[in-house]
Amino acid sequence: MTIKRKRKTTSIINNTLKDKAEFIILVGSETGTTIRFATAFKNELIKANKAVFITELNRYSSYKNAKNIIIFTATYGDGNAPANAQNFIKLIHLIEPKRNLNYSVIGFGSKQYPAFCQFAILVHASLQIHPKFTPEMPLFKIDEQNLSSFENWKNEWGNLNNINLDINLTDLLEKEEETIFKIINNSKLNIDNTFLIRLKPTNKVKFTSGDLLAITTKGEEKKRLYSVAKIDNTLVLSVKKHDLGICSNYLHKLSKTDVIKGTIQENKKFHFPKKIKDVILIANGTGIAPFLGMIQKNKKARIHLFWGGKTKKSLELYDKHIISALENKTLTSFHIAYSQDQQTYIQKTLESQTVLVSNTLRRNGAILICGSLSMQFGVEKVIAKIASQELNLTIEELKNNKQIRTDCY
Image (cartoon, rainbow, N blue to C red; front, top):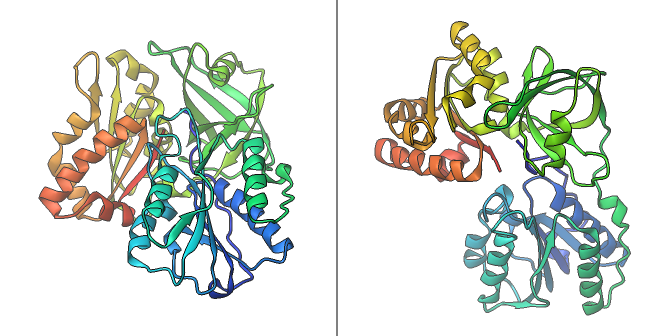
């Protein structure tokens, strides 16, 4: 399973108070990458002797001396706001600026998604209709963190404001130390073109189920991120082989004599919740990967696993892990939906378990969702309906309470 998911966060540091700054930089970032671009921009403004204040979009406020607001924002999932930007649209209607402000919006996203930079579009449009905000330049969108596109925007903004910004673009690239992994086992291709590959790091590296393994294949710049299961101190990946998939084909051809390089990226927001006794795990396809590790080791919680695949044969790849967990009582129940064999989907199966879902949430339990975005949206509609009818709660309240945790693509 691959996607650009949550990565380690980047700190936001200021040396100017918000009410003394002329330039305000607001950031919406799910992974920390957008913060890195915004921080590099801030540092160049400081070198130009400008008073700058940077903060998250959710912390938008009034700014006494501000003249110019620059917004850097990513889009999360299918057009959604990043977690640290979800309240911004409301805030701009609640907080009256102390003076008229020029603004610029730069959106970061991927054209692989239909809703490319959708949240940046919404932010720009919301400010455009506000009487106290004036756009300084058109909305600018950047695909896949393209450095030359960012340089073009930076130069255009700098020319408009008569400020020379000399950002070292190579500093914007992630610098992470790679680990060498031995191939322990690579399964045969399943009927649905999926396979399991087990890796063992050659040196000590901390990881747990739900973390991510970043792999860059030879001749490519883009990293592929795979959600990992930790099983017996090895990493297990569940991979879908695509005909034109460079990384999936590369991984499928590996044998026990091979080694690969990769980087573990901590994904704390999707670790198995501690001190929670009731947990529902929901996945489709290869999204089951992190759950294979979670159901093996967590003996104190009541865990209920829901999985959706195409056919009964699709399950054969994961059978032994699930049967072992059921036998060892680390898995309380297992619920399946086959889209081809049964003509049903995981959300329908979940809907039939209203009592289980409502009781889990009522006991302050958690629901973890991993897999495709379309599955996530369908599942969340079911959860929202159950939460509203049975608990008088909204799904937003459940998410804020960390009872709903997602890692979908």
